[in-house]
Image 1: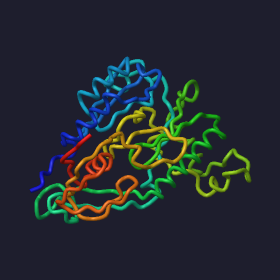
Image 2: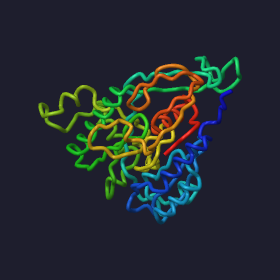
Image 3: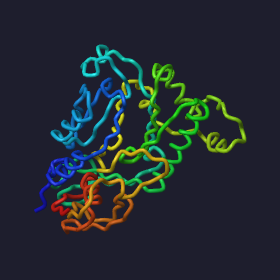
Image 4: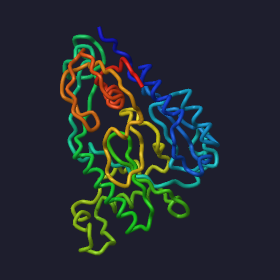
Amino acid sequence: MTSILPPGQNRIVRSLIRSYYERAELYLPFDMELREFAFQPLSGGSYVRHLSFQTAQELREVLLREVPGHVFYSSAKYQRPSARDMEEKGWMGSDLQFDLDADHLCEPRKITFCPVCGKEVMGERCPDHDVEAREYVEIPLDCLRKTWDQAVLLSRILKEDFDLSPRIFFSGNRGFHVLVECSGDCALMDSDDRKEIVRYVMRDQVPFRGVEGDPGWAGRQEGGVSVDEQVTVDVHRLVRIPGSIHGKSSLLVKEMNDFLYDISLSPFSGKAVLLPFITGDFLLVDRQFHLNKGEPVSMEAGYAVFAYLKGLGEVTYYVR
């Protein structure tokens, strides 16, 4: 019988992630001593927040001890970043962050199934085996590319209309982040100021400052950019650390100048064996795989860990 471990409890996967963080090049803000750090365990659950580090090595030691699924620093700079009360932290300003998710632009494929019998189910539990159902979400590649195009358009608006210097990052899962490292007046914008920028880039009854007829105007007029408003207006928002692993995919958070979505985003090499929980055809990163429930399949480790974190099966063997 297949062993159904709680998500995040696979020893092989934890070992691979830990090994990655032993050598990982994490891209941290130059003023990291002013930032709050946080992580979420690989198994999910509550965030561990209000952490403060003086050096990258201090952070690495925590990553090797905890092996988290998600790692963040605050967009805000604080006088006392480890204070547990937001008022006591002493806010000094925040970077400007935008979140663009592919599932806000397109309809993803969703399957809710029982990891024991592999049958699709309605609701949160399998009625036959009384175990928690798993939801698999698959984003088409063309949808990710559309999201990238939106990120590029947003970046251009911020550059040309606001004279800012945005950077685009793959989120590690199903979207992109556009980040502006702020100082001066930019950093001191409050939530209302940031909301005005959101309204502007989303074309929410705010006229563009650009000149009609210039390249890109048609795309702007078509409806602006779809962003998650709550991410941008929240001056205490967390930012995924570039170079870290996204715990729902195993792919890296990575700065991008051109669209990229393939297995090179996985930090794992070698081969692994996946024991599927379900039968069907699935897009694992950039390749289609046919899986048969209970039939072990050998594949590149990057695909196997991706499938595991998507809930499709268990990683049972790994060879470097």
